[in-house]
Image (cartoon, rainbow, N blue to C red):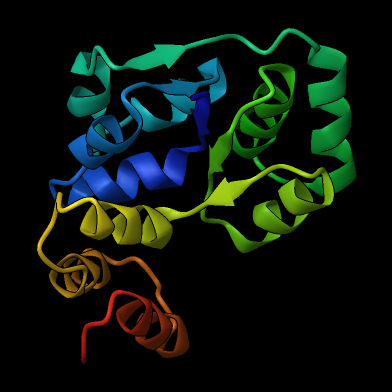
Amino acid sequence: MIIVSDTTPLSELAKVGQLNLLRDIFGKVIIPQEVYNEVTTGTHPAVNLVKSADWIEIIAVKNLEKLSNLKKATNLGAGECAAMILAEELASDQLLMDDLDARRVALSRNLKIIGTIGILLVAKQQGLIPAIKDVLDSLIAEGKHISSRLYQEALLAAQESS
């Protein structure tokens, strides 16, 4: 299974101590160099976790012209565009991505997407976490915006009550 990730799922899961869920669910996650650069800059909790994760593989985007054109056409960030192009180049099974505008572009390119909340739902289904509510609450406490509607839908999908 080929899994490519954008920055946000890595950084958000790292903030709440759940980055290893990606390893436990997918085995290996591939990121483009642009995502690696974004996620390993500064003092974010993800910096050292991503640098030391031997299950995260960095692969460079081959078609830089395609990457440049996507950035110009969409005004999305370098990491988001590189993740989409790499997902296409590798014919990935899933693209891990949270940003709504980026998700719309990825869907228009026929990429299969899962976000941080979707990852939590899979983790619960696989018995890796007992509940998603605590993790969602931790994400919100760490500054992740999750609309009340999405929060309720996630709890419903996980068969948990608020």
